[in-house]
Image (tube, rainbow, N blue to C red):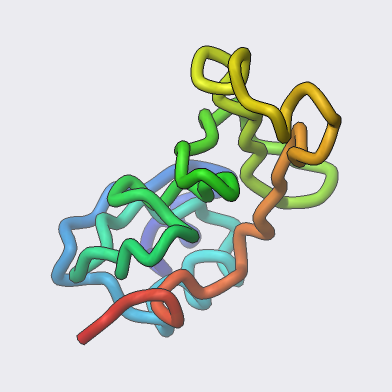
Length: 114
């Protein structure tokens, strides 16, 4: 990554294999203004909080839909799974969260079972 910086390349996404899934790699990439794309080494514990695709879930364990990346807050934006919410009492009473934003620098490994 440092060699790419010497060539004047920055603000670019870099794709790695899961062997590079380490906190230090993420930190170094962000310090050099790169966006690392690295698959996680392990699967999340699905205890009603996350789907296997690392999307947050509602109270009834329906996975939220990825919407976009919010550059202002440096966060992933997820929206309600409206196809599954239409018949839900919680949805009709406005008890469900419409949007969930997860800061990019939150470490998803804390949710992962070894």
